[in-house]
Length: 493
Image 1 (cartoon, rainbow, N blue to C red):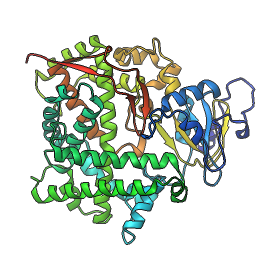
Image 2: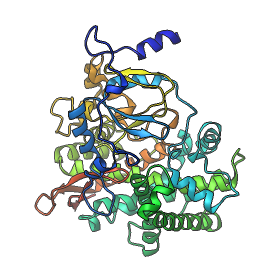
Image 3: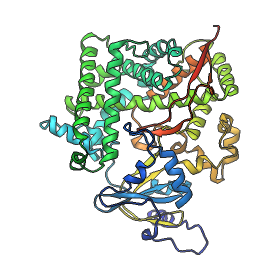
Image 4: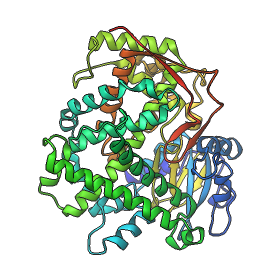
């Protein structure tokens, strides 16, 4: 019952008979008044001005120094923020927390932007929590998260993927840009029914894509510099930069939506979503689409670029994947019925070696104390999960071995601490539970559509001679920076 579950959450000390360590003794990043751990975080920034931070290195160094549970800062109201990298994190999933909330609930800059520019309108449900968030999620789920609906967009996704892959050779020294343009082309095709060709070099589509990408990046930068309020940001003079960039991005999205409704062919999820009866306003629906267009492609782009890099560095894995794809697809495009186990294993291994996000899961403001690895985490804390330690606990952790995700290997892990590797929190880049990315099903189809086309059509390798040494840097998602050069050779059909 509930009492037994609560007892489990309060148990788990590492040494028999040892009392849990009190919250006051929790180790953590050095913090300062108002600015929290910002100086420590910025010390891991690599390229001045772009906001990129080596978060994986920061978490790895902190885990070595402090162990699997450590404090990263404090939210307003003296509510701790705690990082956990341990299978013990599963206890947190059982701890009650306040109203469920959207991923952008804590992003003050977005809320301030819409309150300032559209004071008469209700906020985008993705920025809210509880019942308002639920209304928005229920409105979009049938058109995006539903399995059948997601698969219905595959023709548009494939059309964009085929167009993008045909130009991959033009991006040998800009693979991250290729992935971004391809992801945006696919997502805009799926969502709006438009044939965008940024990857093919269309100047208008490139300008549109760049403005939307810039809007997302300035949003993240403003959050890094001043996480609490516009007043903090005014000191640094960056609010105006964000406001202008976000407004430009929104204008691009509104123009695309208008073009889709006036000149589109009715394909994509947008027309049906806007026409559907729902418990949110039309303004809210349009602003939800804007956020989806801004944010959804970023995760897809990072996963694509990182997977292409890992395949380029592991030619035997690439060849094995090509063999599977050609046997399954016979040179054709990805279909709703396609089944490729090795491709799934490649994606799981990519997430282990180079995770798309530095933080895999968040539990906000827990309503009970919980003990993780013998450390008390108090009520009101927000707990972040990073799978760094778990991902490095496998044999030969620095090697890219998709076979470690086979049924046989997973069976061997059962009943051991490594069984946690097979939990969706560790294995997948799109979150877990009721807040799992609403575009995750479509994103996975996009990733598989593009990779299946690319690997069948090209052989590619990492060019060690011309590539500069790189760090794994995050503005939003993790990306090798500067991105290595990858050389492509077109294969005979």
